Length: 273
Image (cartoon, rainbow, N blue to C red; front, side, top):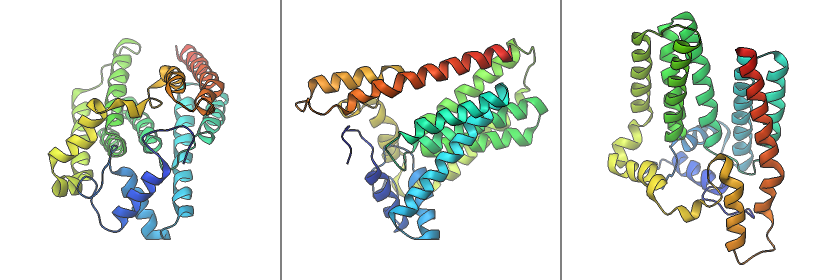
């Protein structure tokens, strides 16, 4: 479907969502390398608006808009309205170039950012209610991508450290414990159906062991962050179809966007300091 090969495409997300809509269970009846959040979400959309590609694409657009809102809110929290608007526009351009629809990374990242906003609010107000909301959002991030649930917890740990070092404030252990309890309970609830039908061993194999220890040759272009363009060049050199220049296009968009993000982050941190 795309010139650049990868382990994930629109057909994969669309087909799994349709299967879940028909009553199949992720893990037992179909393979999932990410969490079951995307099939669950799109199956619900199909139940409301009917099974068709347009419905699927509209749902994807709504999810991407939610991510843009989350990015803008985080930027607004760290700086002035200009930086919030700048982050919104820049992120819109990056998402516009994402030629994959129904990608689990997008909602996972959105829930991760919303969880950080909720946790900062909980820390500022000393609110257990917001700590519970944070835990639920962390669980939702993990429902779409288990690794993003881990990232969300790590980011919360950084927030706790920043409160202790920069603001000279200690976040109550009780509030942190409530957040962890809420995340654990919400995760059990979210994964209850696949766990009861497929079993722990199957989900562990599909969601944890295979992404970590499986055949990584299929993930040549799906490498993290800074090194992805280098992997694209490696793939282009090794492939027999040298006329395919799609991987090299990463160099025209990836690094300028990355540098812009780094610059915006530095400016925001300087203003915060």
